[in-house]
Image (cartoon, rainbow, N blue to C red; front, side, top):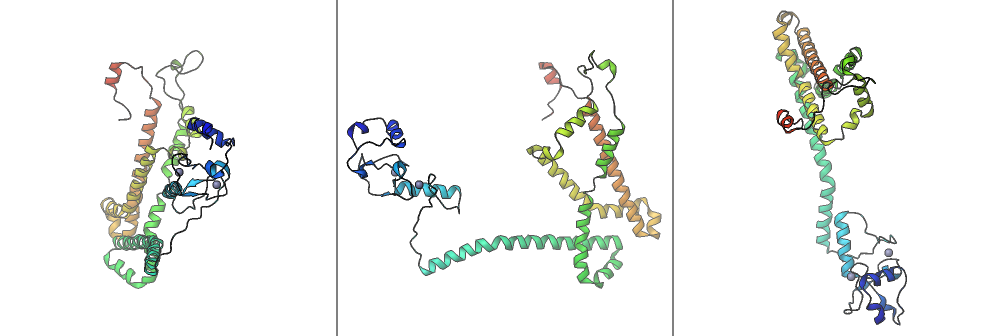
Length: 325
Ligand SMILES: [Zn+2]
Ligand SMILES: [Zn+2]
């Protein structure tokens, strides 16, 4: 490599090399530069040069040690993906010395375990869920039909019961998907539309500070940001998770609640027709729970309508605690 070229600073040497302005030289081996550490043979002659891909020019040569490290880093970032040259996409030819027979067997065993065990674990989890569902179904049957009748039913056809019993918790959970409260809330909102009083509007018809928000404001908000959009937000996702957990617990405790309410509220019917009183108990619970959530949702809606943003003064800050704390 010419002395004049080597006296240039590294970055200008590099840009010349990359743009194809390679310095004139007698021996092509002298022009080699490792594209990873950007060193050539100027300091001392290294002997681990390789050209591992189809690239020509400045990207052709690389130190084997530099490339090895680069390949290891790539493999750590995306394991199992073949490492290729970023320029010409050639897959590097990496030769692993063969393992002795015992070592190879151990390696195969290890890989086999890694492949099979996730499926085994999934199977165990599925079986656990299934048998929990069977036990839950059996307990519910005993609770609803009474111990003697329940045991008789359980002994009659065990194979049918293995299918019927798990469907009990499944149906209970699915029943929570029927959101009748939401339909009522939407209907109520459509029925009770309120306009902003005239004294809270200015001459053009725009609301004055402190005026309640109109129904149109919430309609538009819901149209532009449907619930599925909001789910992505982290905090709301945890809120949804909490709601789902509540739904799960309520669904599974519904039979017990129904029996207790059936006995307490419909005692006279309970003595004549046990199942009817339990059914009435369940319906009573669902109705009370639904009405309570409709009432709460309505109150929260009214609260949001009346909400407004205050001017910042230190006194206002002290008097009104943060909404987000
Ligand atoms: Zn190098
Ligand atoms: Zn290449």
